[in-house]
Amino acid sequence: MAVKSYREALSEVLRAEMRRDPRVIILGEDVVGGLGGSSGEEEAAGGTFGVTAGLAAEFGRGRVIDTPITESAIVGAANGAALTGLRPVAEVMFMDFMGVCLDQILNQMAKFRYMFGGKCNVPVTIRTLMGAGYGAGPQHSQNLYAMLTSIPGIKVVIPSSPADAKGLLTTAIRDDDPVIFCEHKMLYGETGEVPDGEYLIPFGQANVTRKGSQVTIVAFARMVLLANKVADKLAKEGISVEVIDPRTTSPLDRDTILESVRKTGRLVVVDEADPYCGMASEIAGLAACEAFAALKAPVQKVTPPHTPVPATPELEQLWIPSPDRIEQAVRATLQGQGFARTG
Image 1 (cartoon, one colour):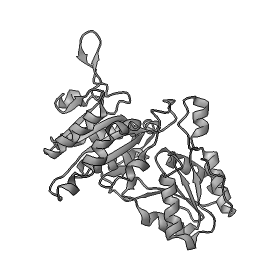
Image 2 (cartoon, rainbow, N blue to C red):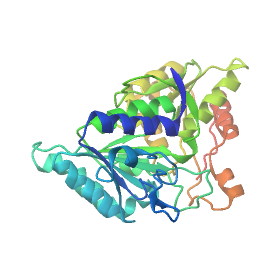
Image 3 (cartoon, rainbow, N blue to C red):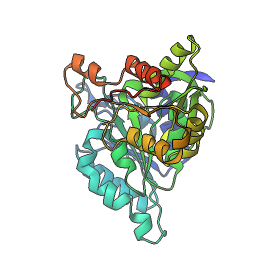
Image 4 (cartoon, rainbow, N blue to C red):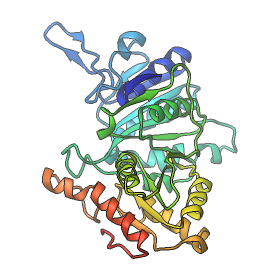
């Protein structure tokens, strides 16, 4: 297996799927990259983060489409294209602007199959950026996957590694239902081994990134990396921590989470999203409802406070859950103690 970055893995999938299936198109703000220099030649830089770099040069502007800055039109066009037989990959550059196109997601793409009696497919993939740590401010740094997870009719995917980025994006593009594909912007430079050739990961199949017997950590996106670091550090002290990355929140692999909680008897949930009505609360509720008898200590939630993401870099770093806070939560649950949750 080759070592690739998260960004490279995503780009590889887009290129491979466009070659494999002529129905796959890409549309969004700056997905081509505009024009470069006075010559007017296409730059094809692939937008701010370079994931779609070079695709327009290979597949043409008819399949890689720069759009105006209007998320409602991007997602609306993708919906219409899907209903006519194409397989669009739409980019909503920042997840924060899902509110602009929420009707197209909530009341259209998520409902088409149901309202048309199962007679149509809506194979739309929406790639979107999320997450703090880039100093992008409160309107470009939110994690809203819990809000999207609560919408029946769409699938929500959150890859945390280059391998998962490849396997899950391939599955998303080939899926006949709408998929929201959430990419944490702080992961684009992360590298790791990526399987060669065609590689798909089924939705609803969690990844146990660290095996353990004393405490279960469930974490999402970038928080998986921090949880792994904490697990490795505590292992040197003889503390055995199991880390679970759900990879998809809809569908959610409840069985793997519950099996781990019943084995360890302790649960810490690490989520960069808001503490209220988020996935941390959902996972904590799942354990309380279906594995309560196995719990040896209160469930711990490690989240940011219930505030907008700070614009000041120093405050932003305090806002993001840290390895120290994760470690404190693990130690607290081992002692059977409650932990002062943020928010």
